[in-house]
Image (cartoon, rainbow, N blue to C red; front, side):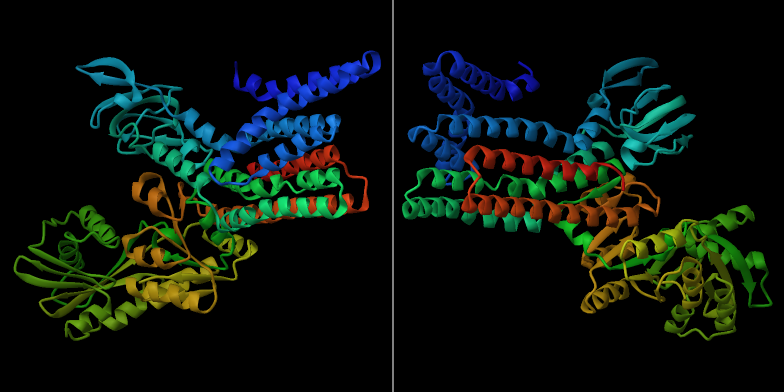
Length: 612
């Protein structure tokens, strides 16, 4: 028996018995009531079993209310009401199960794109094996139209790959030797040789599936509140029904109160919206850690952005070499700077080394390197002490200015990040490095404002002049420049003390303290970083800046939907209660309206599956 058949078997059986009872009422009235009781038994038996299981766990739930109402209706001879209530409840459950399944479609789609097999090169032969059995380091072949079975690096070949399953980006990406590919993406042409770096559960796709599963099951603050509310609400409805029955001496009224008091729509108001919202985000490459984080993201009204790698491309180039010692040439200054930076992993070291390589300068390896966070590097090169970094670094080491400050100011005014160079305690030159502002940075800042963010702040360790130029181009509201990692942490705390709910966006180790302190930590370009996928409150799998305002807008839509659902549930109960007190609402009508409200709540949540 299929899931579909099992889902509808009970309501179909009960409905057939009710139809038979109605026909019997016309031709054989004596058979009508037994058939109605049989219909109630068929539809009510699963409900009664569920109520008993819940009671054994000391939980008073909706099933108990329906069971008591149905049994009571049979006892007082209201067989039609008993059959109608249980039948409608069964139909409602079947519809609820069918539609709820669609809200988890995003997770099902992710699981569906997981690769099953891989073609591995073993001893020069192509061998087809289950994808999970590929060993790290083995080379797999990805042919046209095939799914990439592992995370890995392209070692040979070229082709276009659809990465939408992982990053949410629909535009195919060209891959050549040295590029990274992810399991679950699809080759749209060409032949790729991929050396596996992650297989089976150790792939980005597997981590995303795990993350979405956990997030969809995580409870939000509102859900926790409603759970506490339901623990008191359902017993209170039973007490209310008993008191009403005793005072009015009307058993049917008491049973009707039990039915209309069912909090069915209220119980699913929050989880169904969260599942749909988190699923929508996963489809677009936006991973949210859980309902609690989604609710917090909906309240974000200040966003702190790291400059390098977020507002800029993070791929700076060397633009200027200023000689401040007449005994040296431009090449000499570049060579000393490159030799000092050769042992540094700072993003600004790479453009200096690249420029030296292009100039044909032999770099080598420094004897000792001491990075100074947020300021520069102190190195020993062939016995000579070399200091390169901000003017403040030179001052901290007691090195006389020697024209460094003026050269640095001039570079900064032109939007360059200045690196001042001192050799053996003497300033010999200054270098200018420039990073390119991303074309989508300014539209992203505008979109944040449109999404309700009141303050966009740039936090950077760069100079004030460079930061001001980036701020002018991007339109951020506030700039805080010359910051050390601990200063970024302090800036986030200051925003929080000012009453803002802060989202911090960064991609570097230097941002880790601020990311952890912010109300919502957002990791950009997280597809290749397992730690970011597992730890960030919101992980944007791709590198497109527009995903940030989209994530905040999705959070707001989800919370708005939750509030709408709660309102529908509460208004339904209030209207039904008024209908009972004023007359005209029977048990069957009450159940019909209740099940309709449940479906309204589910359909309302399913709107989140569509893009805004």
